[in-house]
Image (cartoon, rainbow, N blue to C red; front, side, top):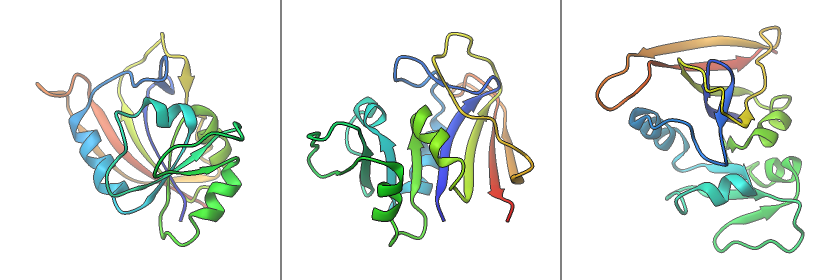
Length: 162
């Protein structure tokens, strides 16, 4: 079951200058809990924006650069190649960026979204629109802002309609 995992503002913003637009500790914990022990599929720029290797996950990096290398990572040249490589995993995760998310929407089975309840006009990267003809909202878990979380947010799980 291929799963997209993403944090998205109300205006579909997901980042600016290859970085996140917010800091939500509970979201980071959820991301870690869901993805640990699985393959994480990402574009090269997303990988390079990480603070380092994410422990207990197999990093699968998609790049057009034929000679790109990264120690302890799997390097592929297409999303199709990444999905084929992760076929032994019961739930590989697509973790970004914007272009990889667009490609994954047609083949993913599940979307785990953290919906950040604000807009970021300065963003330069956006998540594709979720077509509710093809996706069903299965669950939502609302969280109010507090001293550690600057914005209200909701965890949403969508499943592909078959």
